[in-house]
Image 1: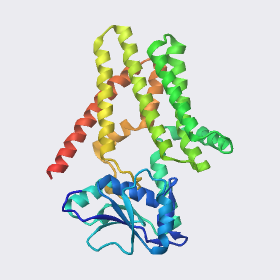
Image 2: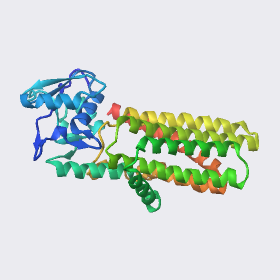
Image 3: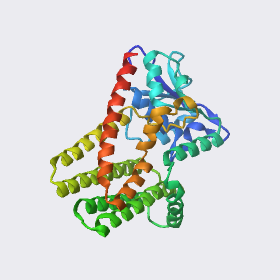
Image 4: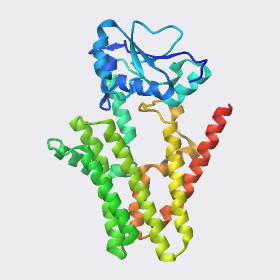
Length: 343
């Protein structure tokens, strides 16, 4: 946030039919927790959280587990000259940064308005739907994943166990691709392992919601194993192709893939919202070539492509295609950011 921008504060006073909206749970965490994370991502200073005197103790309890202490509880309404994040709103991080940079009302960054518990549940359901949407997996992987999560809900097995199991299956599949030969070990076993990993990776989120055990560590673990499996698989593909052809260009392709994917993921992370993007407006949805690019790069689409190409023994096609794909996405992302800053 620039020096000329108004101070960013959080208004935690809005209430719903069951009390403070700031204390309501969204995706396993209080609304206030999401707001503080969002504020910290766009403001380097201490965040003031305004509330009534009688609500301070409750808000302090909600914030006690946060690793960062870049906030202070303030009494009464926010100052009139402040940029105010309200507890009855969901905001888009990228839009919020632009609004603060250009001196625009932060209400332009609102993507969902909340008027009670029902609205929070609707928003939460929509966020979950968008996060877990599987264009292809919903036709076969979702049902066994739901059955597995329901069977495990009363056990000591936690979502992180399923996440680790999915990651190990992907690593095992990558090892088979890299070193195994033959129809069964080199094609069938990797494809089966990938399919099982997809079911487990789908089930961990469902189990977290059923058990109420969603956590920041679990989200980090899931994302980390997803990237580890992705990198290991494509590294294995490059190594197997090199052994088969003795062409070092294939090893270079594997390295370029890793660099391109890293830069792409870094670009997303550096511009991503810490608040779930439950946008219900058409303007935020990709269209045209961008929509096609999003679909092609969708994790579920890529996962199914791996399974199909593993069965055919042609995973090298996935390596070549997605190396070019992520290079193009990186270049496109750079051009968009340069254009946005120049505007």
